[in-house]
Every structure is written in C-alpha cells, then in structure tokens.
Length: 481
Image (cartoon, rainbow, N blue to C red):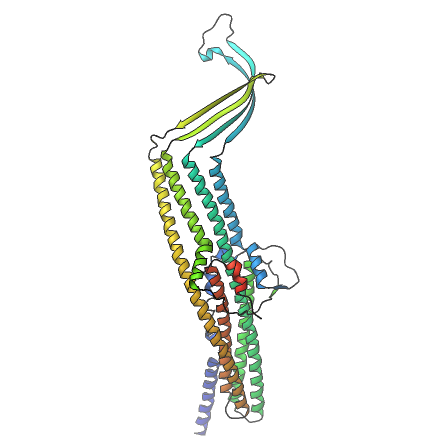
C-alpha cells in the first residue's frame, strides 16, 4: 500500500504539472490574445494602399518617426497615390482630346515639285505645234489651312463630359489621400500597440521572475511545497514565450508600416509617439453627416460622374442635329517663290445627318445605360456614407467606454496581485493565487492596450467617414498633456 501511495502521489504530481502548464500557458499560445477587434481596418483597404515606391537608401542612423511624419511620408510615397497621379494625367489627356475637336485645326505646308506631263495620257489628241510632252516645270506652294467647327452641340457636350471625368479623377485622388492617411495611421497605431505589448510582457516577465525567486527561496527554507516553485517556474517560462511573441509581432508591424510609407529597405526607426489617448471631439451625428456630404471626395466624385454621364447622354442625342463648320486656306503659289502670287479659299459647310445606320440610336442607348448606372452608384454612395458615419459614432462611443472599463480593470488586477503576493509570503495560501493574479493582470493589460488602439482607430475612422481625415486626424489622435 505504501508503494501504491507513492505511485499515486507521483502520478498525481505529473497530472498537476500538466494541468498547470495548460492553465498557465501564455495567452498568445492559448489563443486568448488575438488580433485587435479593429485590426481588420487595413485588411479592408485595397492592397495598393499598403505598398509604396521607396526613395533613398537606408542609413545607419536610427530614425525617430512620429505619426505626423509617417503620414506625410505616406502621402508622398504610397503606391496608391503614385498611381492616382497617373490616373489624373490620363483623364486630363482625354479632356484635351475632346477639347481639341472644338478648337481650330491649323496646319502649314511648304512644297516644291517638278513635273513633266504626257498630254496623251490625259486624253488630249496631238495638236500641231504643241509638243505631246509638257515640261519639266516646277511648282512652289506655301500654304496655311484652317478647319473650325462653328456649331456642334455633340462635341460641346462631349468636352463637358470629359471635363467632369477629369474632375472626378482629381476627386478620386483626394479620396485616395484620405485612405492613405487612415491606412498609415492604422499601421502606426498597430505598431504602437505591439510596442506596448512588448513593454507589458517584459514587466510581466520581471514580476514572474521575482515570484519564482520568492517561491524557490521559500521552498529551500521548507516553507512551501515543491509544486509552488514549479508552478512559479511554469508561469515565468510562459511569460518568456509571450515576450518573444510580442517582440516578433512588433518587428513585423514595423515592417508593414515602413512598406506603406516608402522607407528604404532595411532602414531602422523608432516610434516617437506612444499610446495616445484623448477623448473624441464632441461632434453631433447631424453635423457629421452634413460634413460628410459636403466634404467626402467619393461622394463628390459620384456626383461629378453623374453629371458627366448626363452630358454624355446629351452628346449622344445631339448627334441627330446638324453641324456647321468652316474650312479655309491661304498661301503663295507659282513656278518659283520669286514668281508667285497669293491665293486663298474659304468654305462654310452645313452637315445634316439623314441616315447613319442606327449609330446614333446605339450611342444613345449606351449613354443612357451609363447614366442609370451612375445614378444608382450615387444613391449607393449616399447610403454607404450614412452607414459609415453612424457606425463610426457607435465605435467611438463603445471604444471610449471600453477604455474606461479596462483602465479600472488594470488597477484592480494590479492591487489583487500585490495582495496575493503578500498572502503567499505570509504563508496564508500557496502561490496559485499569485499565478492566477499574474494571469489576470496580463489579460487586463492586453484588453487595455486593445481598447486604446480601438479607440484611436475608431476616431480615425470617424475622421475618414466625414471626409476630413487628412485635415483632422492628427488632432483626433493628438495626446493631451
């Protein structure tokens, strides 16, 4: 029976150790510490806005990078904006092409020719006294020609449509800047949150090391059982794993940030701004919605595209109407430029469409289909803006409440840990309470870091929702001292 009792005790110790290792595994390993609830903000942004065109070469100097500078760098180097600039140029080219058809088309030509003609080739019979072969003789001509459309309503409306498309391209670029601002701010805040987790994990490891040393000394003094020292050692190793995980995530977040703002490959930098927290500016929902419809570049773009489609529809219908144009030229012609005389011609023409094989009807149907599509897109954009603003308001309020709750949770967990360590030192209880208190404090720190990040990115999302991210996001995220 004595042998069986020892076996049971030994097996029971193994089970206790196994259970302790599962219970005390770091939260990142058990799956309790996951990505932030709003960490998908960047994931929802098109990949083009997470890339960049790096400039310069990496230096040996470690840069101090504040949020403001990160945003400014992103606005210069981000791939989405680089491509957006080219989209503007393409739209401007289309507008100039449409405008060119309304402006005079002037050309100049200088020619010098030598001819020899066979009169018989023109059907002329032989004429006595006149040679059958005439020439060679020269002809010199210098002439300027002009062609101008005087009245063509279709061309005018097409130019108007192209001009509105160019305006829409510029508004699309403005919207892209808003996206880049939020994307960079999100990546920066993710990195800041990861740095805060590294600091918290380091602090938790220091606490776990102290608890382990205390348990080990008390075990050597015969004051506690060996399981207490073992439990403390497992907790310390768990915190070491959590610290390694946090450092790795922080390094990857810094790489993502550097990629989006165009830092040279391999450039080392530090985050100059820490975890900023400040209450969101007091803005009413009605005011936010009014600002959104006034400033949102995507809404203004949808309006411009609708007006462009309307002009394009009018241009298609105007193809039924007559057009009026003028053609003329003036020049100097003669056998040589020394023996020449000025000549000119002018013609005004009225073109009246009679039958074009259904072309105008096809153009009108196509333009009308585009018009209906633009109207639907505008209404969808209006509804989407309303939804985004309302959701942003809910997120800001919810995140602010979470920050308040989690900050108190950290205070209570810290106090609980202190009392648990005092009770263990006094021999009132074993160190299970200490380990549980350390776990509770670690979870409280994690939820606080996540809530501050969520509050900051919710404010950034609200700024984007009202169309003022580039203007106001720096103030939204400014730390109050």
